[in-house]
Image (cartoon, rainbow, N blue to C red):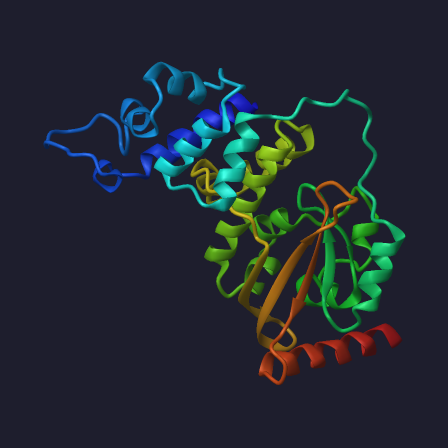
Amino acid sequence: MSTQDGLGAFLRSRRARLRPEDAGLTTYGGRRRVPGLRREELAQLAGVSVGYYTRLEQGQSPGASDAVLDAVARVLRLDHAERGHLYALARPRPAPPRRAEGPERVRRGVRMMLDALGDAPALVLGRFLDVLAWNPMAHALLAGHLPADAPDLPDERPNYARLLFLDPHTRELYADRTRKAHATVADLRLVAGRFPGHPELTRLVGELTLGSDTFARLWAAQTVGDCGTDTRPYRHPLVGTLELSAEFMALTRDEGQRVAVFTAEPGSSSAAGLALLADLTRAAARV
C-alpha cells in the first residue's frame, strides 16, 4: 500500500470511530450515511477548508503544516503513536535509490550484549519483526520447538508476527492471545508507516492476511501502537504460568532493529519459573 492510500485509510478509520457528539457537534436525528465524523465536520473542527482536508485524506497535500496535522490529530483524539503514524504517512521520506538488500545482520556487540544478559531472555527483532538473534533463554521461552540456530539462517528465520498468527505452538504460549494479537498488528502497522511499500513487508502482510482471518480483520482496522513495554501472562509448556514484563529498545545504529528483554518481578513465582527454565536450558545444552 502506498503512503497516499495508507494515509486515506488511516484517516477514514479514525473519523469512523469518533461520534459527532463526542466531538461536541449537535446532531438532529436522522440516519447518517457514514459512521463517525463526516469530512466537512472534521474540517470545520480542525479549522481548515473541506477541500484542503479532502486533498489531505487523498494524499495530495505533502506539504501539510505542523499546525494542520496537529489540529487534525487533536480532533481525531490520536494518541502519541497514532500522531507519529499520521506524520509518517503525511510526510513520507523520499525513497532511497533501490539497491539489492542483503539479509539483516546483527552486530557482534549486540550479540555479546544478549549473551551477557545471562538468564534474562533477550532477542533482536528486525525491521519487519524477523527474529535476528536470541540468547538460549529467549529461545527456550518463546520457541523451544524451533531449531536454536534458526535466526542465523536468513531463509528460515522466525518472524514474530508469523509465529503468533500461523504457528499453533506460539498461540498456546500467550494466555491473553487476543490482546497480544492486537498489539502485534498495531506495531506492524506502525512499521508499515515507516517503510511504505517495502516488498518484504508487503509479502508478509499478504501471507498473514491469507493465512489468518484474525490478522486480516485487525489489519483492516488500522490500529496503531508502539509496544515499547508490556506485561503479560505466558503459559510455558515446561514451567507453567509466567507473568513477564518485556522492554523493547531501539538500536539507533541499526535502522528498525530492536532488542526485547523479558524479566519477572524479583521473588515472585514467575521469577522462580524463569530460574527453573534456565536450569532446564543449561541441562539440555550439556546433553
